[in-house]
Image (tube, rainbow, N blue to C red; front, side, top):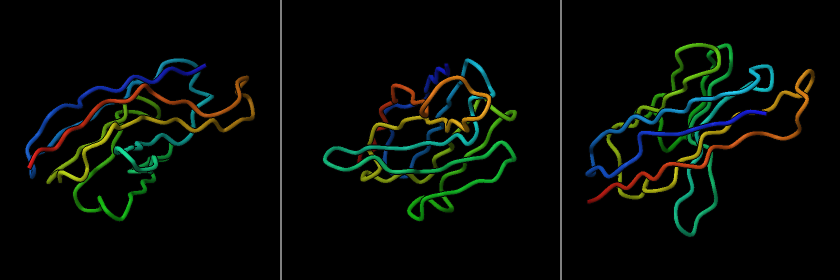
Length: 121
């Protein structure tokens, strides 16, 4: 199995920055794309950014130009640099690892427990 642990959340003023970190442990063959999702109160969980093992990134339109997803190696750790934060981006941010199947002996994707990001006005 894979365990994901997020850190770096906290309270920040509007316009400020935070950097989230996600550390994955377990069998790396069970991980393909990694990403960050967020869920605000009363809203559905949404993809914020993702990065493949090859370094291909994807961003939600709402965060393009402000957020950057990076990694130190092919798997872990994965970071989300968040700049110019807005109050409406207050949410629990979750790390996700996609399961490619194949040689992985486990089913389903993997999720961290989440880290709270609060942006004050």
